[in-house]
Length: 418
View 1 (cartoon, one colour):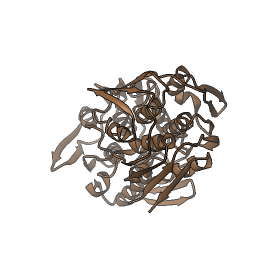
View 2 (cartoon, one colour; view 1 turned 120 degrees about the vertical axis):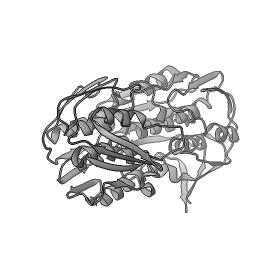
View 3 (tube, helix red, strand yellow; view 1 turned 90 degrees about the vertical axis):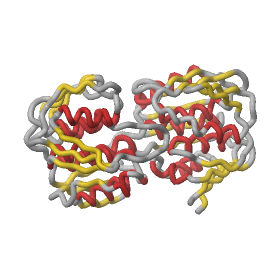
View 4 (cartoon, one colour; view 1 turned 180 degrees about the horizontal axis):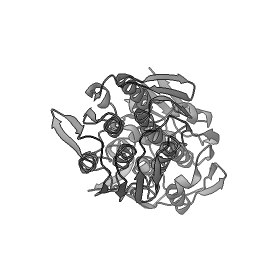
């Protein structure tokens, strides 16, 4: 397995560009199962999860060709309606094949999903919605066996929680159903808006994406189109926090600043200077910054995918306390023990972490437990004295495109070893 070595103490400076969004491109890839023909996507990041999704699409019978950041997917006759455990266990997004397969072919067998071990991300909300659309579902040895009784039926679906994957799955399925579908308490993330824009390009009629009520008026058929993936707001936020934790000055280009509003607000509250210009965000660091409190919440609240990285920043407060409350995933504090190994002063109380400043981090060997924890430990290593070696960084490659290269371009002393 690869590992990453960081010698901390350098202030990051310069401009770096954001890659395409991991969380946006994955549902886009599976939406190709809704329409036969060639779909073309631009600004596609080179990520492990994208690679795994393409392997799954090939298993279904699609032809996949990549040229740089352009991905061409030719969807045709279905070779298999089964999403095997060997692929789905590697990532959460495999479950997103369920809706398109049911809508276009009326049958799907998808293994329960894997991915990072950050909590029980149950798919019951997906399945409950499909049942309302007339789908018969059984769970057999860890496999979701789903069959539609004729065409899917439009329904009014009230989600108990604004699940992102559930909203995407049901939205895709509803595009070819009989009758309109209303998704209430829908997730509002920018990635859902991006998916809706592509589905509408294909000929669907989706209204309200980005609000908590989405209406889908179905069509008899859809046609493949061309689309540019939105920038990755989590990567952009991680790079901003890398500049902040090193007390540097960085500019993140090719992003969508308003997607980062909750993070930018907290950075300004802590004392950092933020300048937004078009598709760029510039961060300048004060001599000292203060601790602040964050509570993760569905969009537009503070993203759980930036919680670990922000906690790393709070360890560098000169004095005082910052608190981090996690409300999305119950196991998303596994990075805390690794931060403590570096010298951080963090106390856990149920789902809240109290981070006391005034402690100098010292480089040490640490182990990444999940995707965002990997980024958290890299940020901590940038601020620590001496060398920090991060093991099990394969998690990082699932969601960040060449993060070590981007940090190096800003002046970080960071290297990857095979």
